[in-house]
Amino acid sequence: MSGLNHNRRTILIGIGNDGRSDDALGWLFADRFAESSDLEVIYRYQLQVEDAELISAYDRVIFVDASVQEMETGFCFQQCRPAASVHFSTHKIDPATILWLTKEIYQASVQGYIFAIQGYEWALKQQLSEKAAQHFQQALLYFEQDILPAIAAGVEQIMTPSERI
Image (tube, rainbow, N blue to C red; front, side, top):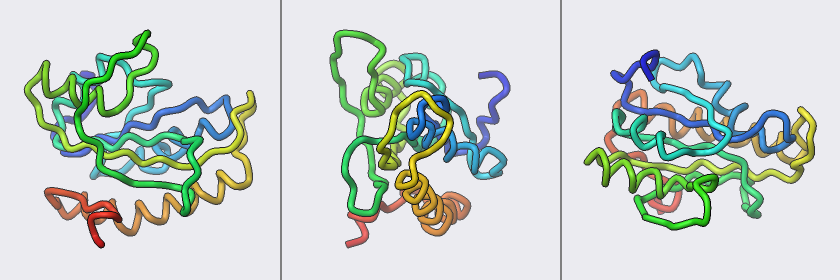
């Protein structure tokens, strides 16, 4: 954590595996914004309990990951609220649990968002499926036009598409 700039208010966590086709969506997305002056960007294969400490230093976190869920637009940007969950193993910790741990352990209220991009293929290869690549481009455009300007402007709360209705 020592190399991270905690003066930035927003951290983007790209989750995935660039060796498993569409599972690379989170990392590829993070790559696009790694040089942004408005975001701190990090990469994870999976979320870990220790990530609660990391995000406790920020006002906002955006978790970006591939999803198997069908989505009308191929991606979904939504708010994530803290919630405790219990799993058999710590190898499956979701963003809501990380936010809950952040609040419980570090008394930090961090705004959380999930940016899910629909994927289709998960085989061992370093190439996105054609459909996932299309969704990736659409997700980038949405983020660049709607989300990044709000972050750069210092907007306190980012509105998700469902909140704009």
